[in-house]
Length: 225
Ligand code: CA
Image 1 (cartoon, rainbow, N blue to C red):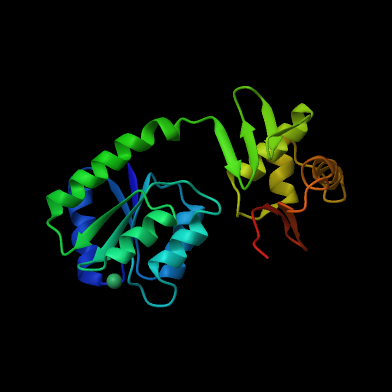
Image 2 (image 1 turned 45 degrees about the horizontal axis):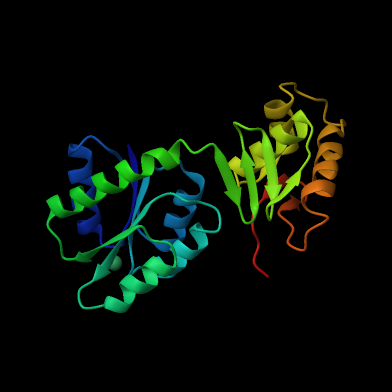
């Protein structure tokens, strides 16, 4: 299993990393909230261990930003005596918490429980971004519970954008991943497909999910006003 540890204290992070590595996990470490959020949002981790007290953007801000795009299990590390932190963490979507300082076996037990719990969810064929839901098995897309009819290519395009929500995909990437063809740079097939897709999943709704990144490509994500 792949685990991301977001902890600014170098010694503590190294201690956690070593213990998890010895238990057979692949471990990435980020030493501040910004790097941690980026790693969590763009990586394919099975679990995130997130310290609340971080310089810059703290653990709560990281969690709340992460939850707009990802449902990866999050174990929060909170300081002793801060019961408010636990409540706040759970409200923001943390899956569990551990009070510092802790013994490593305690951490490992929580990690095991979360990874076990996370497995069926991992196999969940439904991708969700905001009120958009994509069921890959039933080949069904809904927004706000409203069924949306899509062609096979539109569904493939939407699946790609949703699964990689928050990541900007270039037209070339989209063309090769959805159409499996490397289009000439002057081809507008991606633009046309994105426009059609927008007319179905974005135009009828106040909150737009597909965004154009000028000169780069497209990103599907929730953007809070
Ligand atoms: Ca810390």
